[in-house]
Amino acid sequence: MNTVKVAVLMAALTGLFVLMGQAVGGNGGMIIAFVLAVVMNFGAYWFSDKLALKATRARAVSEAEAPELHQMVEILAKRASIPKPGVYVVDDPSPNAVATGRNPANAAVAVNTGLLNILDRQEVYGVLAHEVAHIKNRDTLTMTVVATIAGAITMIAQFAQFAAMFGGLGRNEDGEGMNPIGLLVMALVAPFAAMIMQLAVSRAREFEADKLGAQLAGDTHGLSNALLKLERGTMAIPTHTTPNRAPLYIVNPLKGMDGLSRLFMTHPPIQERVSKLSQLKVS
Image (cartoon, rainbow, N blue to C red; front, top):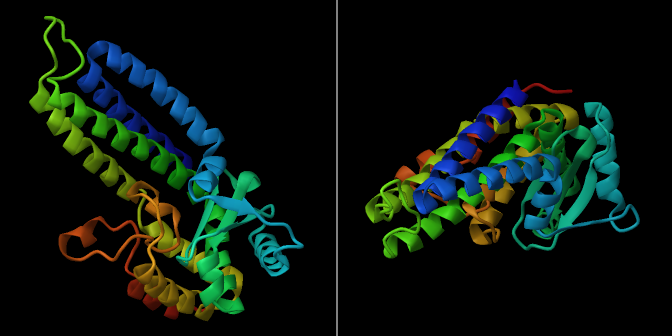
């Protein structure tokens, strides 16, 4: 089912990207956008782990550098019946963590130094269990592919705004420039549509990862306490990232949102996640 979800999302985002190319550069722009989309889809699938790790500026750590991290990840991977993921650390004072990889055999987990500074061992274990659960559930491919293509759509939308200022860069069949108003509308609507598609990667995946993570860890308290601390920490020190990459993290890495903007949050409210965890019975 997850494979079908990825295919549908990639097709929808590819279609939107091609439409953006046509709006900016006419038929020629559409062809160029299609070729770029094929290349991006291929790259996002095969190199999703490397792209995500590079975007977060993660660095691999050896067992000698981080023996406890490696030990915890190895134990959790065995309990999840998956190969041990790569272990990475991000030099970032904002407390957060990510998992990435197109499948369990090509996966990695990364934790920010800020997380290691504020969480105790049980809480770090709970966070790592959540990330291993994402890998076990094969959520990581979905998140990284969508983040990569949505970011490209946002980038071309910015170019479309620039093109609209000059009356459009492409030509239609009559040899006239593209409608600048249409370009501007596309530039404003496309990023919003891409964001909605990101939300199509249901927030339910976080609940599922919380549930499986608690089962892998053997208790709910570590993850629950970690989520509460991480929420406070990320509000005080947001991660330097872009909105399209926000779904990669265990908690929303951006500043807290209020009002209507809460409707477009990529993560469920922390209190709701903690509440669901408190109702679980694990051993």
